[in-house]
Image (cartoon, rainbow, N blue to C red; front, side, top):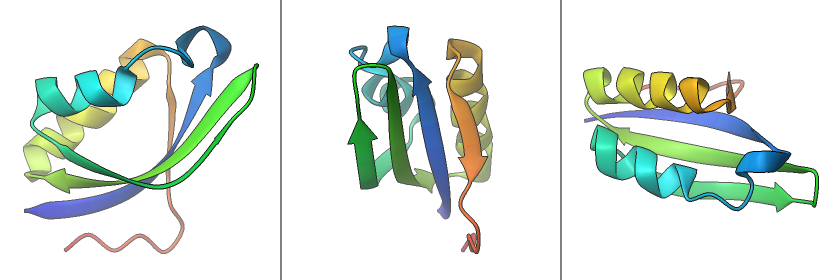
Length: 79
């Protein structure tokens, strides 16, 4: 299993949607929330994602297609 830390920035229209849950179910990923900040206009969540390399790539693609901005966490180490 590989791990990757990412920061997700959600646009206003996705804040109340279960995007992380859906991504985890559809892509076979285990998410671990490290930090979250949500306002009425934007949501920002730092996650540690765990899964196979292929599933991690699928998860990032899934999020980007939904309209979520995905940024790697500086100093991220994939194990």
